[in-house]
Amino acid sequence: MKAITNTTIVKTDHMVPDGIIVVENDTIVAMGQSKAVNIPADAEIFDAKGLYAGPGLIDIHTHAGGDYWFHEHPKPAAELHLQHGTTSLLPALYFNLDATEYIDSIRKLRSFSKEDPAGRIIKGLYMEGPYLNPKFGADQENNKWKGPLEPAVYSKLIDEAGSFAKVWCVAPEREHIIEFIEDVKKKIPGIVFSVAHSEASPQQIEACIPFGLHLATHHTNATGNLDKYPECRGVCVDETVNYHDDIYAELICDSMGIHVDPFMLRLVLKIKGKTKIILISDACSFYGPTPPGYDGVTDINFDFDGQIAGSKLTLDVACKNMMKHTGSSLSDVFRFASHNPAQLLGMEDYGELAVGKHADIVLVDEHMHVGSVMLDGNMIKHNT
Image 1: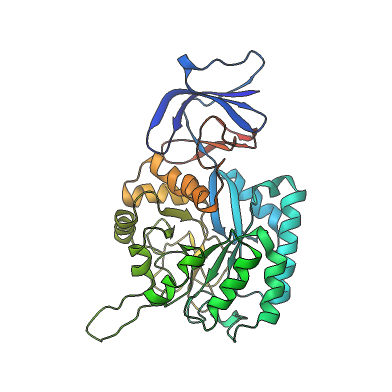
Image 2: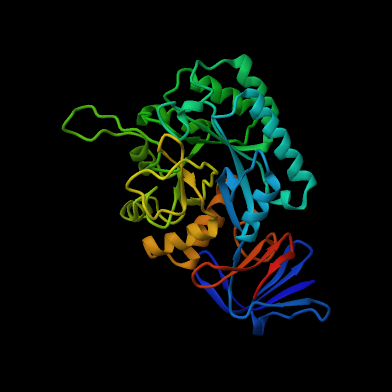
């Protein structure tokens, strides 16, 4: 038994001051204000020293940790995210991998998730490709999938990924994409589809919703605009995502508001509401030179064509930036970075601190600086 004391417990819509959380094995068994919770005599006590306790962060879209790509060096990448409070994540595989590299990466990450202690945070895969619009996204010159969709090729990829794939990104305007979606759905019934790297019309996106398209990859980034008339703004991916209540919007929230302008962050939050925002890191390890006009930028990457290429973020920092840019509370950002992704993925035991829930817990200060991290009921970082 373990007990976290002297903490403020962060719920999705309120806080519980003077809190205690009691954990047995990997499950929360008691929780509440100190006067209402009995701590077992044999419990190991962790004094939070006034820090806030929230659910472990869930990063559904990250390619790397620090200098390490997940598909190449998963251990140091996972360990870095874990130290920053991310206790569940989906490594993202990109369209710059060919079919053999995709399959090799899937096998490596599946094995790592089962065999290495740090691999426990990997809950599946985020398939950012292969069939996106080649006009959009970083590292475009290395897109291996610009040609027609070929069932003989992609069926092997679907078979290898299986239920380990949790999110599959598609550009709905690609020819024969519905056939691809149907084939993925047959093999992986619970898959979530995401509109990504796309200039699809509302109608093309809406055709995919019945198959489980409930997510927008890095909303407002790498999306096109359909200009029907020179004088008028068209309606495209971003507008469709904002319109549909059942589509979650991923947001990359960097310190200077470059991926998503702070005003746009506030607008999307106003439109989508607190239940349909998901913060992601989209961390990458591209090291192209910083192009003109981006002086002082420290937390985003660039490819060698000068295109923005993901971030250098961890999810705790993205939460801090979201608070700064939008005025969101601690309860809000824990919702955006834990509860909402858990809801999207059907991880019912995660994303919220409550009796019976999984004991992934992070202790933070009011600015989301991480002090301690509990994974599966074990304190793996304790710096309070």
